[in-house]
Amino acid sequence: MTSPAPRPRPGGRSGRVRRAVHEACLALLEQRGIRDLTVPEIAARAGVHATSIYRRWGSVERIVVEALLERSEERLPVPDTGSLVEDLTRFAAEVIAYVHDPMAATLMRTLAATADDPSLERARREFWESRTVAAGVMVSRAVARGEVPADTDAARVLETLIAPIHFRLLLSHGPLDDALPARLAQAAVAAVDSAGAPLD
Image 1 (cartoon, one colour):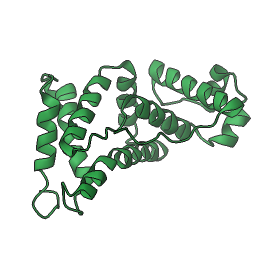
Image 2 (image 1 turned 120 degrees about the vertical axis):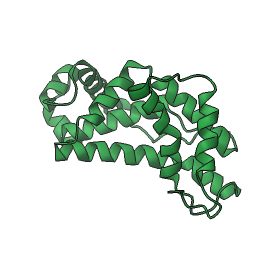
Image 3 (image 1 turned 180 degrees about the vertical axis):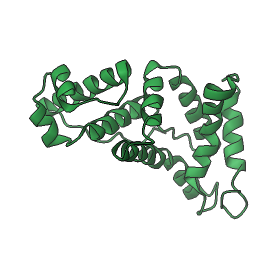
Image 4 (image 1 turned 45 degrees about the vertical axis):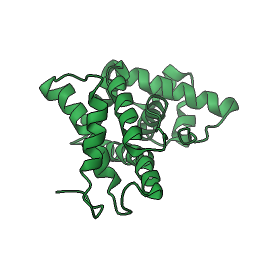
C-alpha cells in the first residue's frame, strides 16, 4: 500500500516561481526566524517580483504555512500499511528522524514564536490543523477496517503518539531509540476506550 497522493502542484513557470519562493522563505526562516520577515525580502532572494507574491499569496504568513506544509509532506509521508499500529509506528519513526533535521528546528522555532501575534497564531493553527487532517487519514482508514470505533478522536491519537517525542527532545532529553515508535503506537491505540472516545 502507498501513502495518499500529494496535493497537486503547478508545473511550468508557475511551479518554478512557487518552488523559488518556498525555498527562499525556508532559507530565511532557518537563518533568523519568522519575525520581521517581509515579502520584499523573500522576493529578492527568490528572484521574483514582490507584486507577484502579494497577488498569489497575500502575506508572509501564507507563504510560511504553505512552505512548511510542503516540506512536512515531503519528509513525513503518511504510511498506509493496512494496520493502524504499524502505520503509527512508521509515522513515529519518521517524526523521530525528522526532528534531527535542521529544518525541523526551524519549524519548531517558527511555530513556537506565534503566541503574541494574531497573524502568526493563525499561521501556526492552520499548519497544525492541516497536518492533523493529513495524518488523521491513518485513523480514518482504521475505522473503515473496523480496527477502532467510528468516533475515535484522531487528533487525540496523534497527540498521544507525537507528544512524548517532543517531550524527550525538548525537556527530558530522554533517548529516542529504535524501540520507541512501536511503544508509542501501542500506547496511542490503547488510549482509545471501548466506546471509541478518547480517555480523559
